[in-house]
Structure formats: C-alpha cells, structure tokens
Length: 158
Image (cartoon, rainbow, N blue to C red; front, side):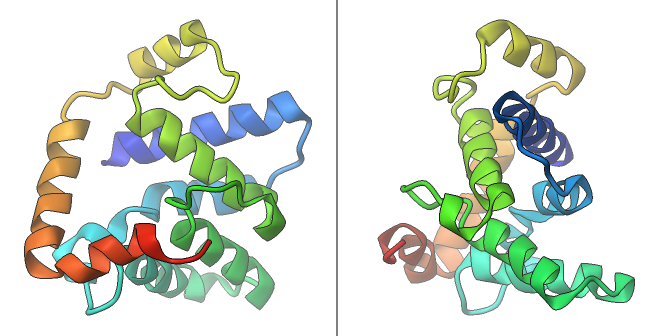
C-alpha cells in the first residue's frame, strides 16, 4: 500500500503540473500515503473508512501545527477520494487525489490525459506488485466487519 500511496502522489503531482496548478505537495504526500489507512482495523471505527482515514490523518498531522484550513483540505481529500463526480470545488488537491487514486486502482485504464508511457515508467519505479491482492484483503475485511459503512461511501450525495 505504501507504493500505491507514492504512485498516487506522483500521479497527482503530474496531473497538477500538466494543468499548471500550484499544489501543496506536502499536503498531497500526507494524503496520498494515508488516504486508504481507514481500511486497516487499527484505524477503524463504526464510520466509513474514508471518515476514519480523515480522523487518522488529522491525528498524524496534529503535532505539526498545520492551520485548521489546511487540515480540513487534507481531510476533504481523504474523505472524498472515492466520489464519482469531480471535486474541484473542494480544492485542487482534493480532485487531483481522487483522479490519481482512480488512475492507479484502474491500472491506467482511466488516465485523465496521462499517456501510457508515463504510467508505465511510474509502474517501473514504483511496482504495482501485490496492490490488487492487498486492496481485496482490506476491502474484504471491511465488508465483513462493517458492510453498511462500505456501501455508504458510494451512496452518499457528493
């Protein structure tokens, strides 16, 4: 999952660069590494895993005294990374993490304009080995222990 996070970070940065968007790269890196952390049992509560991930991210960055609006932006990016509709209104980083995660999880089937060669180079630098198996394990565990919260991620208004 660490490599998934690093790929999501690099994809988000590339998407932003291609659009000429100035990004908060530190925020993007923290979000990219923690956006799926709510799937792990140690971070789980009775809420959806994206809300659990948002709470975990807030705890992780708390010692660094980020301004509240920066913590909120990072939290939005974690919580909204599975939204079906674009999230530009919530911040560039929010939408770019959403797109980057979709690109990586789809193995480049969805590309949002990135060329296959660039994505293949990324996969060489940060191999995808084990990603599908680990996501299946985590999602399967979450479906067994809190099935209704997993469905809420995709059913809530966005």
